[in-house]
Amino acid sequence: MSEEEDDIILSELDDEELVQQMFDDLYDGLKEEIEEGVNILLERGWAPYKVLTEALVGGMTIVGNDFRDGILFVPEVLLAANAMKGGMAILKPLLAETGAPRMGAMVIGTVKGDIHDIGKNLVSMMMEGAGFEVVDLGINNPVENYLEALEEHKPDILGMSALLTTTMPYMKVVIDTMVEQGIRDDYVVLVGGAPLNEEFGKAIGANAYCRDAAVAVETAKQFVARKHNQGVATV
Ligand code: B12
Image 1 (spheres, helix red, strand yellow):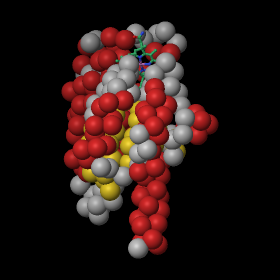
Image 2 (cartoon, rainbow, N blue to C red):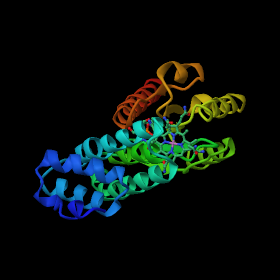
Image 3 (cartoon, helix red, strand yellow):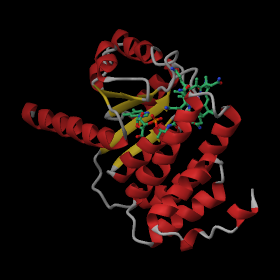
């Protein structure tokens, strides 16, 4: 770190400068600085969701672009991801403590061959905040993991995440297996991840593709409400 950077006192920056500095700190993988920045924004009255989307996800977008363009490499991106997770850990309890009524349950996991988990974790956090009970299966999940978790937890929703074009087809393997076993219609299947789109979601037989965590929450709520209404109608 240069002396010049040493001199920056985060709390003395105005909001806009601070967010810019957090973009730089995320880029440089500085976990403690990111944690400090998150705490300062919260103290200044920023809503946890705003800190998450504007400071953290915003910073990760820049990292993503430079990774794509060959300016950053895996070790640097891992550090950035680690810094992001430090910030997310502070926000997690705040997002979960909204006092929302219990909406339903979700099993979520990243598919086999894929170790990206930031987006999935963000979806989990937002779903918990919206009143869903979330069972997180982590990364690199073969079909068996999903099926066992569905059997054990009987959730309303199954969520799958994939960030690689090579792993996203695996979502179809899971859905096809559910069809074969006659359990597909027992669950709402939501899929997400940067390389996916709505068309892909439809093609593999998911109920919906969700572009981000906020859309995931809204979509989940709609499906669960519909499911409950159907339940009432058939009684
Ligand atoms: C961070 C990162 C990594 C980190 C992951 C750390 C971690 N713990 O997750 C590390 C360094 C480990 C990594 C490794 C690799 N990565 Co990477 N990675 C990224 C990066 C820069 C950011 C991803 C991220 O966290 N974004 C921030 C979150 C918040 O966004 P998100 O994941 O999209 O999630 C949101 C939505 O998509 C949605 N969502 C996500 N999941 C779900 C699930 C459900 C159910 C729902 C409803 C919604 C939903 O909601 C989320 C929140 O709003 C992306 C670039 C990019 N543009 O995505 C590349 C990227 C995904 N990686 C890429 C590659 C190539 C790799 C490697 C193969 C590199 C290598 N040579 O080894 C390996 C693969 C390892 C593996 N087997 O999985 C490529 C993929 C290209 C492709 N076409 O497939 C990308 C696009 C970069 C690029 N342009 O080249 N990576």
